[in-house]
Length: 203
Image (cartoon, rainbow, N blue to C red):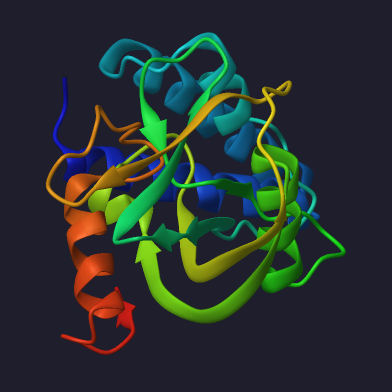
């Protein structure tokens, strides 16, 4: 397995190649970018443990300037316990949330995710943190992770297509975490902001 720094360099090269393929008008440059893309595909396949779906996502052609994607997460605390959800077919837990969808603002996105995953209507109180996934959970694509403090209103949890369970956990007694979605270090930063020990956290 190669180092995180090398993986970040590969990620950057893929982004440059995607942008070149999207905007270059010269057919010879197009051919060169395609050659580089194929070399990078072989390199990633040989040096990482990405599965076929992650590889497909990583090398999906783009017709625009390649930029980080948006991920939104909800920080919901009740009686000093943190709300986490467990995905269908998974044994690890995460803050409710998911990819930001086109056509919705960040707060609209997280309210939509909360309702879909937990069954609750909610209110957004404030933004707690902006994380760069390349720093904490390097994966096929780079994400900007926005974490909002939210409050549950009306509703009730029922298992659904995405989520098999919802529970509230005491701080210091977290279950196994889905580290691609949130790490222990990130949760520690979030507790500090929530408790007023630091201002909004931003990588």
